[in-house]
Image 1 (cartoon, one colour):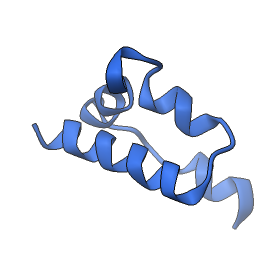
Image 2 (cartoon, rainbow, N blue to C red):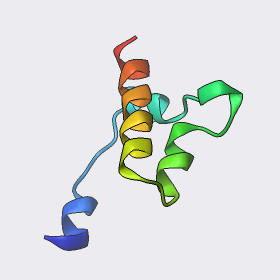
Image 3 (cartoon, rainbow, N blue to C red):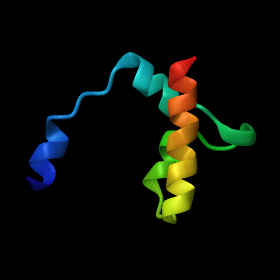
Image 4 (cartoon, one colour):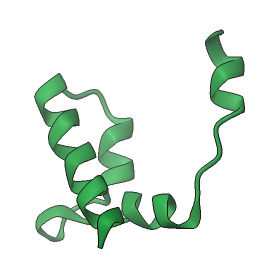
Length: 55
């Protein structure tokens, strides 16, 4: 599937806004997820984005 699977993914307006959430006034979650991070860090960031999307 590789990159072609990624090309088929769409981001909703709500999902986009969730990735713009900033934890502790720092960088947006979307930018932090792009960097190399450990699995627990990624889970925490995704959790923050999902919590923001649920609001």
